[in-house]
Amino acid sequence: MKRAGGIRTRPKRGEYPAALIIAGGRGTRFWPASREERPKPLFSIGKGSTLLGDTIARLKGVVPRERIFVLATAAQENAFRKALRNLLPASNLVLEPEGRGTAVAIAYGAAVIRERLGESTVAVMPADHYITPAERFRETLREAIGLARAQQSIVVIGVAPSRPETGYGYQEVGAAVEGGFRVKRFVEKPSLAVARRMLRSGRFLWNAGMFVMDTATLRAEFAAHCPKLAEAMDALGRMRAGALARAYRGFTLDSFDRVIVEKSQNVLGVRAGFQWHDVGTWEGLWEALGGRVDNVLVGEVLALESDGVLAHSSSRLMVLLGVKDIVAVDTPDALLIIDRARSQETRRVTEELKRRGLSQYL
Image 1 (tube, rainbow, N blue to C red):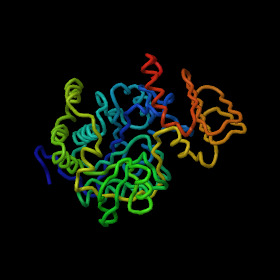
Image 2: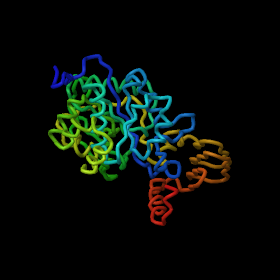
Image 3: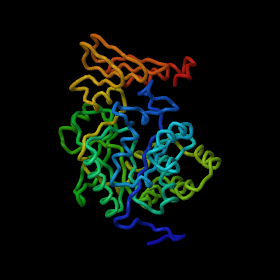
């Protein structure tokens, strides 16, 4: 089936999918390693790679590199071009004039993919998740792609919860559909009591923030729930920088979950076959890298008689003696030492620096 201009309205069976990696955002809870011009996805996790590099590598064998697109903001262009130099074609870095939330980001990214590749199945994912093993991720992603194509639906990936987490969104598992399931509802960041009840019920999964759908399905969902973004999908992919910036100023800041996923009746899910960590804070990174078993030391760090430590040094030797449950992050111009359990509060530091006029450290 084709639409005006000869562009297919559905991808062919067996055709390679595309991927849109959302890599913008400032990652203020990862200060001082994450800055406005060097965001969290470019952070080295201690084995010669970055969160973004690992995200791209996980797609190998499922999405060809020429069909992988990375979306960031124009202010971050230099850092991302350098990071992607040997990973992806230069034209596959897609730049937003400014951040306007994931609803606009996905509409714009999908518009660019549609313009470049024609109608495609697109896997949308954040650049800052820590996932192992990679092959199990690929298996799950293939399942999601097959389900999205067969059912012409938005497919989300759900992770079996290991604890009553209040910082994540949840999805309730409904009736089985072709190896997946219908999502009955979404619950965003519940209270601890509600999270405990959901965990006990066995019916809820963590929402991993990954979406798979055909571009035609996506446009239809935007048309039903946010017509302005449906129109944007038809135009943004061809806009020059000035027109794009003007268009962006007219968009409301909002998330794809709120604008589409929580309203749509066309959302299916698959269960993740992999270990997943949303590396949103320093403590999250500590846990992802095995902190519950041992200290996590990145860079040139010596820890003596210390326990529960995450230490990162980018430029010089760091020595810790007799400390417990802390995060210590050393960069060339800033040093952070914080109780690990309070790492969510790092955002307070960036707010205070801004208030005091110390924007050179942001």
